[in-house]
Image (cartoon, rainbow, N blue to C red; front, side, top):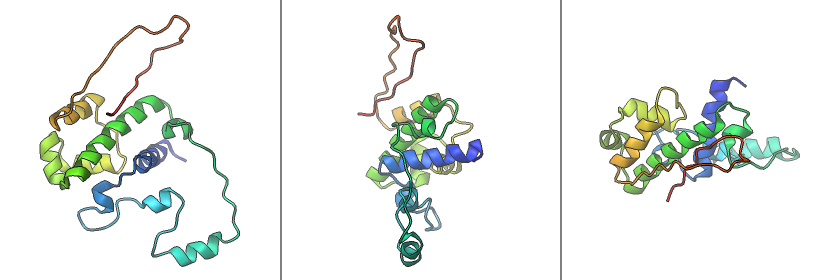
Length: 164
């Protein structure tokens, strides 16, 4: 699977694990952004009969996630991708909690609506973590970055994001 596709799929999985869907599952034209049921391996309502027929005697192999879908997909810089996806998920959560359109949210976070739409569809290229952190701050959240020494036996530092 191409790297770009794995990144997009990783974002979709991360968003689904957070229980979120872009625009409540619909884009501006009323079409599904991505099918959460399909991501979770469940049938869509419209295709349930065909799916059930196809899968009636099929055993699906799966493995438990490590907690970072990007690492599970074998992507380089998986921690950075998970960090960005977490910030994007926080912004999506705000939109859904307050029932905002993408246009209204875009004005609040100072990210153009088409760019915000791309972020919600997993297209993370070209946006910095700093921009996403500033967007979270514009929504009224307190963002705290802590730098501390790591234990001597640790190989390298790490970036950890906690959403409260």
